[in-house]
Length: 279
Image (tube, rainbow, N blue to C red):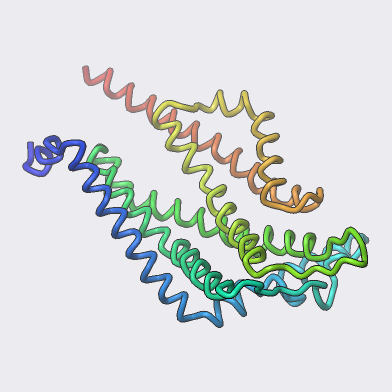
């Protein structure tokens, strides 16, 4: 037994907590550094990214406008300007929005490094083969997260802004949204979508530890579809078109997760066969 392995075995619960603390500190430090860069790049973060989905020339609106025209629906996505204004009604509103938006940007960009730190914490308890797959795990999990973030930004966010920004109970009421409310919608759409796209990774882990199996996933497929629709309703405005658009990729991810679960079970069975043969 190597010295490093013996040290790992001798680590107490408090030692593990201390180790976790340093991994968290490094993760927070990475977020702070990237958040500082985002704080400096204020014009790009706000004028281009945050307020981009508010502009009529946003790519999503142009694509949806062409699709709406092609299928003969009302051109609800063809407009020159969204009928609402964004304002800040508190003294520290804009500064607070600047700080928290920078932190959110820092977290999104630092996500691969955060995964790397979490992997370093749990890797001592894994087998050698499992440790060797660290790069692949971090790459796939990060890729899914960033694809989810892009989906949230280019699909969920503009759909929500278009619906909620144009919705009126009466012509007497003019929409003037607070800055924090607008940014919260963008942030929630992006982060929620990024985390939802981690579903295959979650299913992979749960299958590895024996919590779920392909049979369970197939058995509860209908219930899962209901949950998907509920999630779609939570992160999108309450119109059917938006919910369908958002629910489709989640359903696809769920079906992919079933195949991933099958692959894990198949691999575990092969390992068991090899072990029984060797005995």
